[in-house]
Image 1: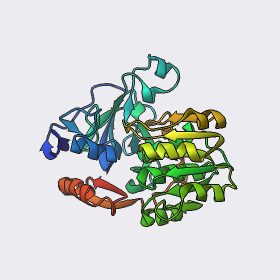
Image 2: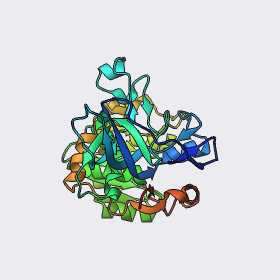
Image 3: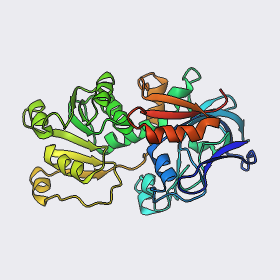
Image 4: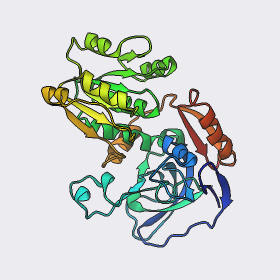
Length: 340
């Protein structure tokens, strides 16, 4: 079978490897149909993902069809459409015992620490696949994992109906956060330096948009919120200055949620944090969000609505990575298609 592997930074190859077979009674065999190209895949390709190891078959945004099941598999069957939950964990460390396996000391991400889904077939434990309805298109299904990132961010921010949420960044992750915040009943403000992205955010439910190159963000948020500030600020950009702005524009008793991995320190005084008694929270991967997200997809409450802008067949994967790399302003989400 064919697989896409990054042997080392700035190289990508399509190679022939042996088709896998079931080794345990609780495993399933999945024929891959769609794999999304994520920013973290691009970081692996560029050699800037410090968590990845090489060589690596990438791909953690995965949808496919069950083609074989082990004798003890109970919840899925041959022919089912499924999406893949891409993390494994020890189950015994402090984080796992706190119900937060996404930050397990031994967390392993499919396509980052272990070979992922950008191959024609994959073997997985039954527990790592979630069934989507038969009438859900592959293009909708493959967005499940990105939606869980938005679901986790809104969960960590404890977004409630009636709150005002400010999202920094209207890229793909910012849009998934937007969609999940709207499903929670929040009023959403979103910012970005690209008006095309802001227009797309409006089409997907944003109540207010801000281009910081055109208006003062702090003044605009104060205007929208009658000087209260945003009850939840979710930073999907991850720069020192966006973290600093998050603290500035958060309301009293507000929550600030960070998604970035930037290692550059931010200059933040304690005063605003203490005065407003802010809660500052990290958000990584997802904690038990797949069930909720899949339900939303099955119910038609989550649709990509133009979030997928480009599709490439497996044999054109090198061109796909090159296109994503060279045209970030054109690509919201690109996916690799299998067996079209």
